[in-house]
Image (cartoon, rainbow, N blue to C red; front, side):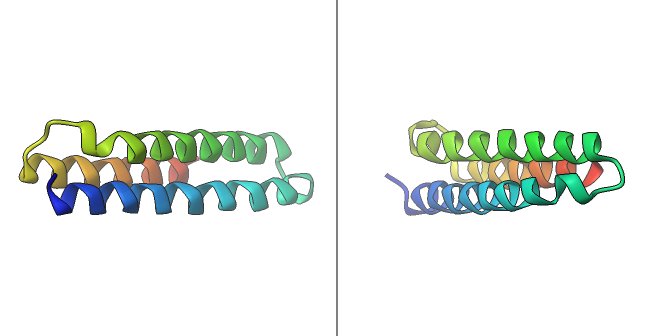
Length: 88
């Protein structure tokens, strides 16, 4: 196994857990928002993104990617997860 693949999988797990904690604390703020339905939408989406990152973090080493493709896929995955949440 390549060390960078296992490190990337571990980092995806860490980001997934952090996003899950953010989603949990975000849920407490929903009743106080000006548009609670929009807050609920962002809360649900961040929970879904967290589960996606956790699942991909567990499966990352099993992917048959080259080192360059692995780096590109890792950073695009992180960017897409955070960009979607920022847009919501």
